Length: 309
Image 1: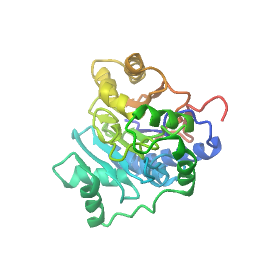
Image 2 (image 1 turned 60 degrees about the vertical axis):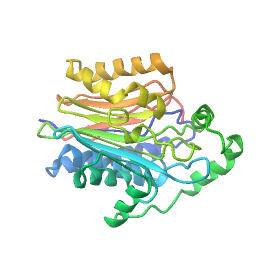
Image 3 (image 1 turned 90 degrees about the horizontal axis):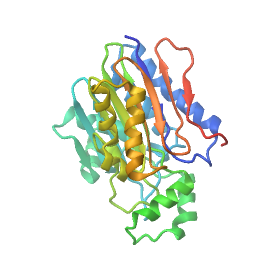
């Protein structure tokens, strides 16, 4: 079995990002994932290691680069799923961990739960001595200050938050899927959520079957407007299509087409891999930088950037 790792940097417009900078992060993420497989690690090891690099980049909407809510506060969601065991773990609205994806894995491996949220999840991160998040970056705070006047912090009108997020290109959840050398599949996802979201909002990245899903047939991770992804169960739908006999490419296209028929364009994207090792990225937004690498590849394949950046 030839192991493969697939990652994405998020769906959106990508008008205000440096292509070379993002490409470098994607390559580093893919290499971190594939090195885990080369060392004999599992698909779960690969997706977590790859996602940590994306979280630590500081330029993507996850981990150190996470955006803030309408009150200027940082809360993050993340999830992991091991397709071999069928177990999942997730965290929602956390503020403490530098790497929420690591805490999500701890929830899966150390507890009987699937989702821990808020202060309870933060307390677990503290007790496990996980590195603490330093707070929003200067770039994120600058965006917040510039646009806070355009959004009413007391309003729960989600459409306004999405409009601003699209203007900024800030729908970029990050994630990874992988197939290891023993044929096991896994998925991981992490996000700071929609910029200027209403405090307390939880997105699809904490919900198995919405933002992430893996079984013994395939693994998928979604990105975009979380509320629409939760309602279409985008990743579960895509993986179930693989189980029905479709290839990863066809399954991704069909699942996204169904999603778009319900919620329109500029709402979602996903990466996927099946048990034969076929990787694919599909999206209905202007762009979704993504890539993959196999154990026997010298250089990763990268795609999904807008025509001009």
